Length: 610
Image 1: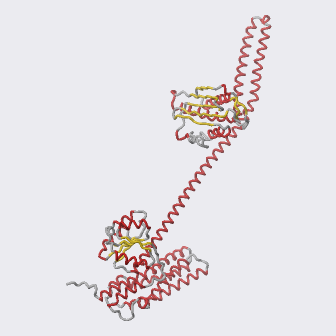
Image 2: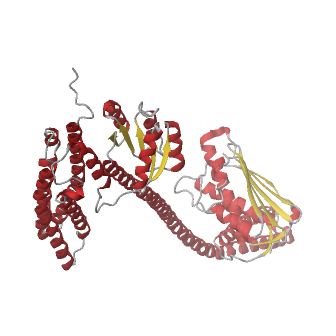
Image 3: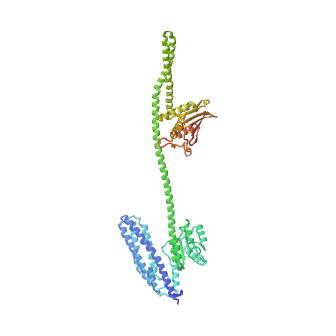
């Protein structure tokens, strides 16, 4: 015997429809109550943190009213209560009782809100007003809903006893036309996926009435294409559509970065709850049972569109934040880089200041040495002349002196030879002093006709003796090839000499380092060469040291770049040399090198530079 109630049983139909309305009423009442309780919790915490006791007191009153409203709704519309209701329960009486109990509490809530808002504004403290206005708006929504409970015409139920035959129709009409007051309804582009054309059209018509834009698909593949092409805001998926019930469509959406945030509502019959649960576990946000309740559908869509809007805004804010963080990181990096450059520049300025002081000291010492050195050279030359004169006198009186003339002549020859040596080395010392004066910048900026071969030879000797002064165990072979046809060239000798000295010092230091690592098997050799070309004079300085690494070649003439160990080089020598040759003398300087074998700097300047 079949004991199931028949679908067309009037009492069963009336009870089912009535319970559906109770669920709808609960859906209308719970959200604004949750707003009241949730926002008052935030307000109370903020007020306590700021030490505003009067605000805490007022918020506690509002919060207490919200909790009492929640208790009333749960007592009348809780799931345990509705599940045990009799089939012939009096809906009008239930609504009247619910309204009678809620109305005074709602009045208390809204009055407390208004009082607290006015007080905040009078005191010029508007930090809580925005949240209090949201709570007040929720109270107004509750007041409108309760007013509908006490007006049978607004909820679509007659005051007379309910007749079973027309109950379902009345409930459906009430749900379809019941206004949702004081609610901001979110609207968007919705995708309906349903294999049944009639069902798809029915849902589309309902949603269009609510102001939504609709896209429709009969299968999962078309639905995924539409989602990508039209940037849909929400998807309603019928569980019986191919590709939906087995989870394939949801799985593809959640694995696609462009679609994973699109909310999904599953539409299903109650007999398919296992599939619904599986879809929820895979990422669907919600579900609706068929035949769907239009009011519940509207509420859920609005809720999930609001969530998506907030998520999208959060994503945009996060992207902006990330962009700002990137810009900040870039700015910080640039600041750090600039600071490092400033520190390096400061250190170089200190070094340059020390070098400038040393140059001034060198110039002073050289000037002081030059005076006695002039006496040495002059008197050495005079001694040679006197020795020649004395030799002439000895020769003239040789008969008188006899054998002593030979002995005196030998002594006189030795004196003459000693004076000649003193004169020779005095001139060498004088040449070194002149080089020191040139290098210290004593005559900077003066163009003059200069014997380029002599200038280069002078600085070769100066560089060699400089490295020998630092390490007397170092020796090298110097191979020179000077073109005598060059003659005099119009240059700034002290500046061009600085170029020669920088390159020669680097060459000597490089060969010395290679000598220390290679041992006695390595013979340091410095080759210098000059050539007269068509309108140019070319100077080549080559060493057989370790060469220049490939990574350093492009940066070799950059300021502050050095291949030497920290503290051993300023990184300015070759940069200054490049400026002297290229900018000042309108010439060229280039490097030819093979790592491990040699390094050769080739300098060319116009033979008629001015």
